[in-house]
Every structure is written in C-alpha cells, then in structure tokens.
Image (cartoon, rainbow, N blue to C red; front, side, top):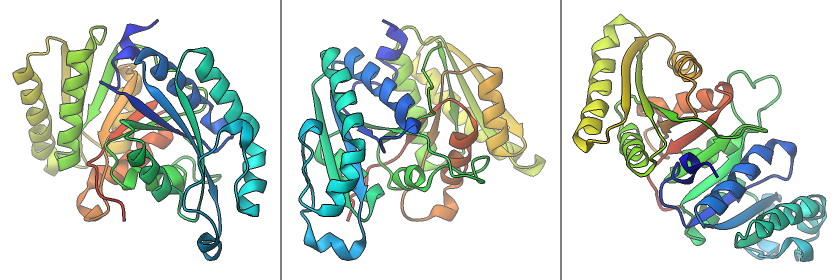
Length: 302
C-alpha cells in the first residue's frame, strides 16, 4: 500500500463519492475506494437523479436506498436510477471487498449541486470526491457545470479526479493568489506535509498576469513560504512567482515538477469577482490532467 496516499487527504473518517454512473466517474471511484481502505474511512456513494423543479414537491426530499434495492417513490427517479443501479452495486461490492463500510444514497433533486453539499454535510463527510465531466466544445476551458457549482458552495475539501487517473508520486503544488481561500489551502498543504511522511516536495506558486503585479505575486509566495517555514515541516520547498496566464502557468509547473496533486483555494457564494482563484481553479481542473484538491470554507447551505 502506498503510504503517501494514506495521509494525502489528512485525517478523514467519511468520504462522499458523488457519481453520475458514467465512465467519467471511474477515476474518482478508484480513488474513493483506495482512500476508504487506506484511511479506514466510511464511504458514502451518492447518486443524484435530476428532476424537474415542478415535480419536486411531489416526492420525498431524500430517498436513501441500497443499490440492490433501488425503488424510489417517484416514477422519474425510478426510471433514471435503474440505469445506474448496476454501477452503484458494482461500487458497493468493490468497497465491501476491501473491507470498507459503504452506504449508497440515491436522491431526487432539481438542484443537484446543492444536494451533493447538503448530503455531504448530513453524513459528516470530510471530503467530496467527484469525477471530471467536461462539456463538449468547451473542455479546453471549462469543467462540467455540476463540478464547478459544487466547488462554488465552498465545501471544505473537494477532490476532483480525471477519468482513469490514479494518484501517485511524492509532491504537491500549492497555487495561491493570497485570498482567504488560498490561505486556507496553504494551511491544508502544511497539514498534509506534516502527516504524510512520504511527501518529499512542495511547490508554491503565485502568478502575476503582468509585470506590474509581480510584487503582489511575490508577497503571496512569501506569505505561504513563511507559514511553511514556521511549521518546520522539513520537506523540500520550491517557491516561485511567475508572470503569465495563471491557469497556464499553474498547469505548466504541475507538469514540469511532475506533481501528484494541485491544491488550490476555491470560492464562496458571494464576492466571486474578488475571488480570482475561484475562477482559475475551474480552468486548472479542466486542463491539468491530474487531481485537484479545492479547499473552501464551509458555509450553511440554504
């Protein structure tokens, strides 16, 4: 077992795997199973069936069922759930074969992104793991709206895993813009470095769009580096401020350094124009071809 991965998400007791039952979720499924086993964590497998808003009042708010006994009360939910019931059963069997406590939850909702976050909070999940489902024609620049919306709710940890991607390696990259969420991401990175003995190198990067912002980028890097040095983690540190398109520079550095995971701050539901990294994170997720851990600040979902 790769001890590096055992601690890569920190101390976790419950994982929520949000799956749409398609091949795009396979990387997320594999990582959820591994982390469930490595961390001795419970796995909650969530499938959200989208329903029309006008139908929502006619069904229960939440329908919790095991995959092998899918029987939602609403006809639309039942029809759509049947298509993915075999996939849910497969995931549940995989988990149980690895000795992982697993619960399958099927929910009918007209606002799936909100439901994912609500269910994660309800089950006291420490992290949401999702696959990467790109939109046709926009895959170079944007990720699927579901993933971006879930990140937008500001759940503490959302791990986005590309199709068929397997986490391996000994280094992570922290991308910071100095915002509140980037500072939370910096502290999370330090926590991971302390807990993960096999993690050998951390790269810290901040990107200025032009030379006039370079001092700002250096301040961001210096702040995160100072936190790291104060923590006396004892791992190799590579910190750099660069000039260019943030998403391109972050992805480029991740490939050059062969990092295992990119860690970034997300954004909340307010002040989006002020949270630069919130928008850049979507583009990084879409193009990095590796897992991205987005750190947010948990907020009440209403």
